[in-house]
Image (cartoon, rainbow, N blue to C red; front, side):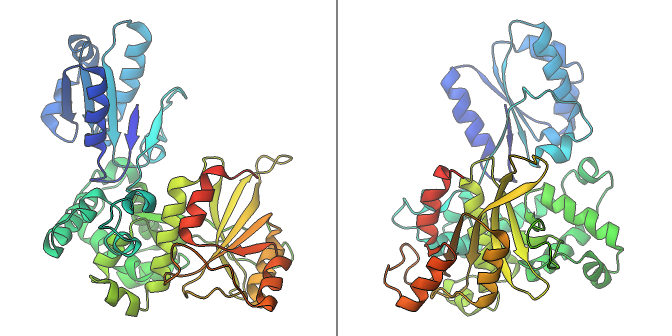
Length: 393
């Protein structure tokens, strides 16, 4: 089993909890350390010597060829150790040049979800949104400790094994600078030329840095949905979002809910938060996209699945308009987008406010009629998250 997740998400803790179920001796090796990689130069000898143990191999990105050796070892030996490998990057980003059999199980570890966090009476949705979803963020006893933990994650990503992911050794200072810029561009359409101009770098170089941050699961590039509205010109470039709003707010120097509510970046931060929470619960067969026309009419989130008749194409099945205000709106541009997509179900997700957990059913008759005409309903984030695991389209 390979546990893939960002830095400090709790992969070692989870590995040790799994190991306890087998009641074996636990051996933990950090492959980022040269001395531990030397122990595995002859993996057959090492694995045979620890055949009765439970082995946790951390930071597999520093020794990716080891996975091939482990798979080969398992094919010729009957007595095997139990092995869990952890990876701080997306699996595909590390092993894109390796022929890995499909029997390898990769489990992405997400940060603490909204539903998990709010089970604790002391944690509200605003705490979760402001501080972020990493375990160490929600349990930080003070702002100083919280800031230190966030700085550690950013530092570890910027000094990580960049050569293995991109084929080039990236500059730590450039990565830090880029993160500061992307924090201000959260929720916008990616323009590598403009970013490159501000950093005095070429577009391909900037894209290499961005791809590394995406592989490190710090940011998300949300693809555009361009298979609808064939008669219209639509945006095809991806949008940039931070995967954890706590890190986003840290880079923006936002420390309180009050300062967040007054920030001009509240809207894009709420979008990033909702998208990340939906990702954690979305069934694997659905993919995330966004839809935007040349006239700036936009649906922030489109759920797609493979088309039955054309498997290579994605079919839009659910459209979600993430709005920044607490009162839902249905402007003409949004109605046109719903019509372009021809989705089976549409939702309006209002911004954070007094109805964050539930939406009152009473709407003016005219507004209710407009919603019904486009097969749309207003839903809270909490209610939407309850529906997601049971989507059937």
